[in-house]
Image (cartoon, rainbow, N blue to C red; front, side):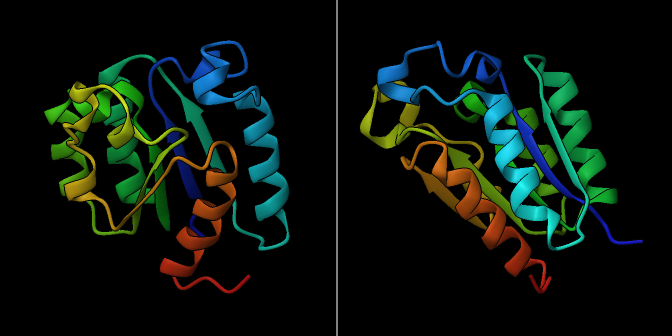
Length: 148
């Protein structure tokens, strides 16, 4: 059985479409999930797509991805800037990890320039809005050596 691609989303991403649309756009997380499902369907790779506002649950899912996934795409949201627990969980992985952000944190508030995810990630995609997810899916499968 082929290992799934995991896409994990952190706090407040459940509010996409209504939360600060001038920064995050108007596309909902459900619409992003659907577009990722459509994109990956032809590859035959299963998709695990989740969102949580709870740091411990996100850490559990990262650890699960380490055992079960071919690659991980992570939009850790605010935990990017605050969670050493997420950093430690990512450092334990031996699979491709793509850090993803809808906005460009480096171009925003100073506190967003602290990043605990990037040092543990294989690559980062920032500032491309919802389109970043499609790019991340393509690159995660490439990094996992999966032909599409």
